[in-house]
Image (cartoon, rainbow, N blue to C red; front, side, top):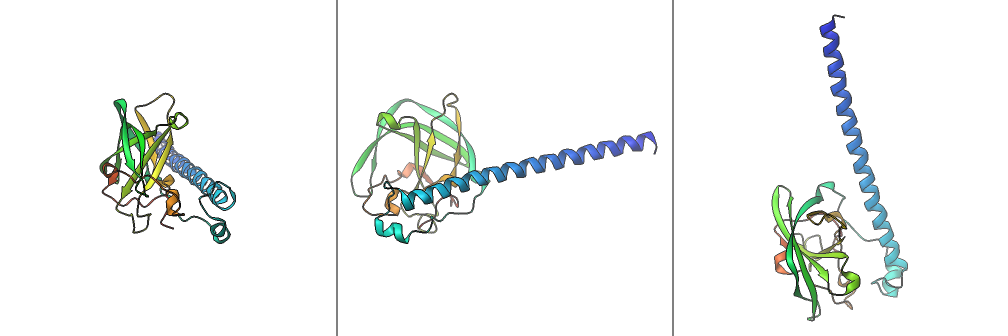
Length: 206
């Protein structure tokens, strides 16, 4: 084999090896991600069926099989840029039983989903033990047509260091307890947190 042909052969072989390694690593990462989501969903099923803190009544527990979800789609895990508010401001959110509850308006999350830009408001609870979690109630065009009609929630642990960005994983979007038991009163997502798209990820309408 001539030297020039040998160099070309080595170059092509190296490129193919890099492509194969990239594809294998990416697929392995997706498998790990899906396995983690499935693990969390199985744990939630056990909680609903067995825990004394389950939103289900005793009769519902006996009839319960498992929660239903959209297919896991990694494209619904998106990076969001945070615009922090100068100071936490009180925000009143209406509840499903015509009550109201106070939350702290903390930041805006700007992200791209399905090639379109969106913004969601991030809230925190007013109680001290809820300050380390972000609460993101939202509605979208799938409500009442696959997902719960009132809307769904995301809950994210507050980052310790980087407060400029975080990941929103709509595969972990969940229904409020009132979707399962009308005895509960749940926060209704404010109109500013409506997404003009169908978020086909997370918990489905039960």
